[in-house]
Length: 317
Image (tube, rainbow, N blue to C red; front, side, top):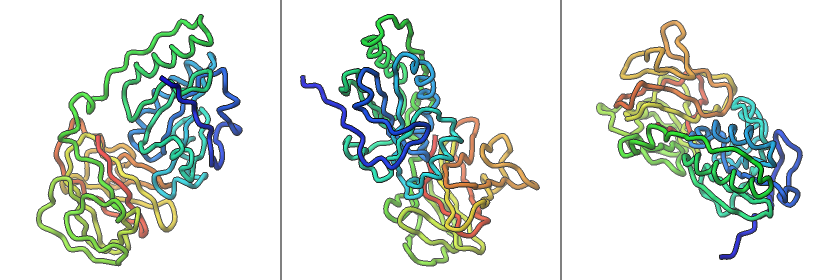
């Protein structure tokens, strides 16, 4: 079978943690490419493993490069990506594929997606999504041994995440709130209109229920001021949301669980302030709203405090 030569990077707008890198200059090394974006929960869950690979094998001629390809428009801005890279503790090189050129060159449509390139510049392995970390590490070792036969390392045994063990059939699926990909509103939506949504008696499973004045834009749902809230009945252990502001940072969000302030043990990024669960938003990012003890059915209510606060997507685990 013909081997596939790795394609050179194209359209990269800049680099973080490194000067410009070219695959042609990395012949003789084993290169790991990780296509990711910083607000993707699936990408974030892979990071501890990627960091471990990088720190363990870089001394053997292993090069790990994160190809940051944005899902949302704000992720094209270097400033936010730099802050996220620092916040997430990423030390390996990150290429800014802000116009998705290298992404499309590799025929990609997934976050994350990984490629291993051997010392001769050929793609020898690819993987989509999370998991299979032991298999990936074995492939790294196998290719490193071609350039350094004396390597005496073994792949670490990694147990699958709990949600991969039980399956996803009950967990609430990802929910997009912008008009282009909206998939879970409980009632009729009026995109690009300053619309005052009325409360509905029943909050349906896996559906977003709006109350008050909101605007649905291409990518996001934006709070327009006054009394408003967003309700969502979900089944999960963890709840995440991607937030931004069309005005200024910082901004705030109030969280209720089943009509009450959540137990502080259930909060992750939010804190209890004067008896209320308050989330402070300091940049466009993915925020961890709830961390329950086990997957359960609940209704989360989010009350925006800052005008212009924008919601992009909910993810669950």
